[in-house]
Image (tube, rainbow, N blue to C red; front, side, top):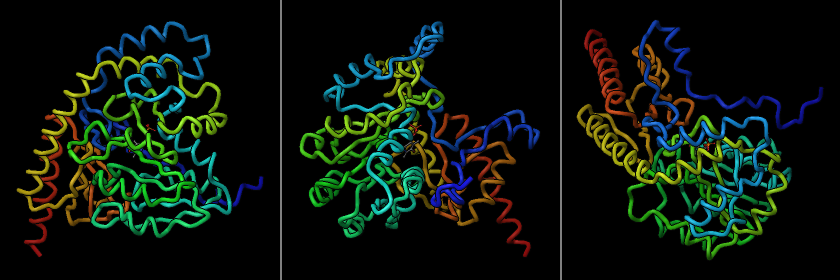
Length: 369
Ligand SMILES: *Cc1c(COP(=O)(O)O)cnc(C)c1O
């Protein structure tokens, strides 16, 4: 079979290591997964009930338009129902946007390193990828603007950025938007917005009222604790979202996911509580890093990119053997870093003692040399 040229050599997404696999491989009874930025506190208790009720009717197709959840989200976000586009995770919204606007002869601008799926889907569409290096973990918006030309269709900003954790503030984002040509789509991926503490984070919902080339991406996979169910959405100009909608597979989000998302959305008190706990543990981890002479990138998300100075793969492996799964910075474009999801108190204790043990071992072996 003759594969499309651009698919040759493209590898599938490499997820964090599954816990069961790690337990079996290293003979551990307990494993802590701090690799994929999921909510360690799970989902709202309301979700269980909603999912069970929906699970009682598995035979019928879901509502492809997701009307019930659409109505609730639109109302609470203060947007029109037609401004929402739902996906099986925001990953699928990224795919749909790429499919709608990119093909051979077009290009797309993004930071590097950033979330892998912008590039991945753009490659599938045959578009040229223009990657603009981060500066100290942050988007270089000036250089991104310079990379735009008449063939640019989409510019991606990941705010806060995965994997570095930094954010673009309101002033910088507003002046960026004002200078992007109006026929170039700006996608603001806000997968971690629920965790943002910075008071000058942009009010992107407000900016949607001014710009008709702006789309926001939100997900239920992170703070809302529904990664297993796959539910995310885009918010954008009604006309644009309606243009993209024909690409959406007819029943792309399941009835379980839709009901779970409604229940999770209603329980904002749960989200608030998770945010508080996560921020407390993030600040503790930052203190731990300082005490141990490790640097890190400032993060507005529920993860921290820690620079240990050692090969990320080596640290990853050492932690794995001690029952803690993190992400090696090698695969994320930060070779001497690890990316650690902020977990529960117990998870953070295990992580800290495992990392300390590793650092201690390294100190011992260099003292012997
Ligand atoms: C996790 C993540 C997503 C997508 O998550 P879904 O599970 O597909 O909703 C999107 N963007 C960023 C930056 C992420 O970290």
